[in-house]
Picture (spheres, rainbow, N blue to C red):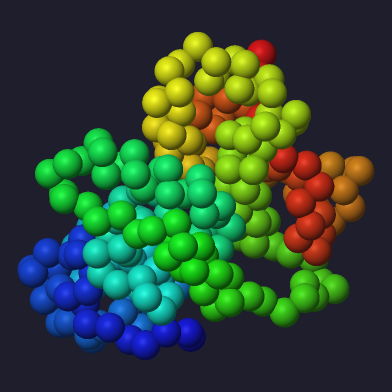
Length: 247
């Protein structure tokens, strides 16, 4: 696992009592937390053993994963997670400029946090480092499973939001006309942030089905920001289609 293990005190979402509870069950640092909570099922098991909520464990795992990135730090991990960037893998698929706007909007909405925004250059560097530690070997010949399909679909949606819906890409024109055009441009980063934040919920609840036109692949569909959204993934993990419907 990339990165150096850090003290649980680097995870700002954990209270003193929650850190103590985790230490009682053998979790002393971020590396041990990540090892003990590799899957949603493992997160629930750890939460039950430690006597803390699953939500607290999940938020802590998100920050611990971000802390694997060199230069992230406790404050930045807290900022990124609060703004909807929940893992190093997710960060690796974000656009630096678009993410800077999302972070700035979060900071503006929460002046009580006295957020220090990282520079565009720093954000780009963190994204590059996230890509380096989440890089994987070429997809195997064997078909991907449902868990991997959901992960890939979520990453594709983050990219679609930043690179299609909130740019001048012609494929996102209907969305911009229907969702953004009637709003002040100052609200657009808020909408963008909310859509990114809703991706995790979409990934969790999306209906998964097969399509004869995609042998061995998956079709994931559900509501993202109250819009019907569909992602098609082939058997080796290639994204074939990302679609956000505008009535």
